[in-house]
Picture: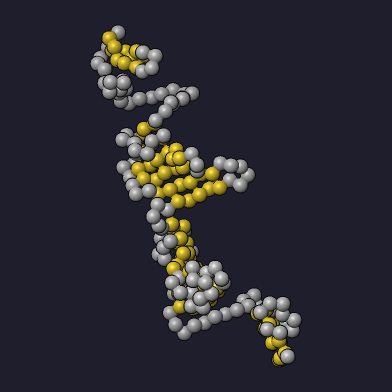
Length: 212
């Protein structure tokens, strides 16, 4: 059977395992239709937080309002009404900061974890890139082809190397189409600056300082 209640402003229908609010023909277990309200559902828990939990055969999620913050929690426990063992994966605080892996984001986007990584996937092509925070450096990665550039905690940049020892260290050839200005010395293959009056000479595979 079914039950239908009507008032001057609302109608309620219960039947066939479905509940309708504002409709007498709900197509889902719970369907709300309201032409005069943008806010269809308001939950007010007399506690420090308010939850909505959902579960299926593969796991569970919980949406939580706590202190004006929004949290998304997940759990691998299937069909668990209490979302047992759930952990917070995403937080949006009252200032609009979003945290992934942290419940205390300090910037608009804050990632926390072991070597947190951002992946940029180009769906129009096959080239994907990543930015990864390692123990003491930031890596710029061509996915599948390794790290291409590194910035370490000392402010040193490596291209083709993840362990730069100078402000800029390049492993490989460098090509320039403009002028090169130096306010320092040039070291040869023997790690020598040479002496006054010497010139750089190519041996075909390297350069040495030699007497003019």
